[in-house]
Length: 178
Image 1 (spheres, one colour):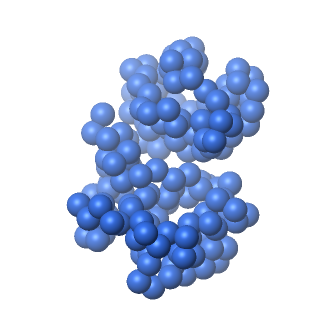
Image 2 (cartoon, rainbow, N blue to C red; image 1 turned 180 degrees about the horizontal axis):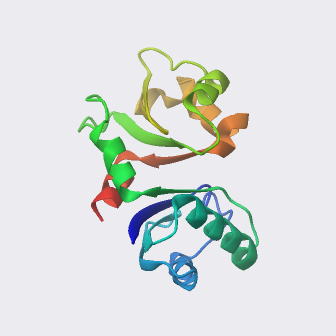
Image 3 (cartoon, rainbow, N blue to C red; image 1 turned 180 degrees about the vertical axis):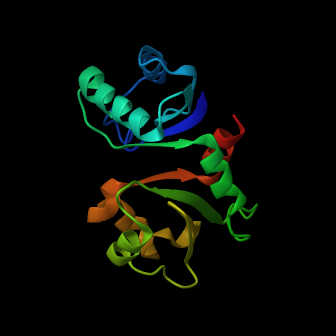
């Protein structure tokens, strides 16, 4: 069995796509997943399965439609892949400076980094930084100036927004450590 992390894009955001995590855990177990754990109320789950990541994604997306009545994109990745991403974080990302907000943007296939960069554009110098590694983008910005950044509004409103799911540095580190 392989250990996976599932990120449900747009779950429990702004009162939309509401999923109680206890119910989500139960539904994951009904899919045959083992050692299911959820984290926070924002669509993060860890589980074990002998299925491929693609098969797990398909099962979860189908379950979301049939059990909860809405279609949301799901990204499943082996836990080792998340650990690899975090081990390759740039030195400036995820530090102790409370004036900087650090996120990890996951690019959902079939989108690629070039698609995201083309859609959103370059980060604003002095306000935000990005660095790409595999299917993830490390993104940091000044908390006080976030509205002036290029990526803040565009990650949610751009056409590419449906192909991204974003988590904070603290959340992804916690998930990798679970």
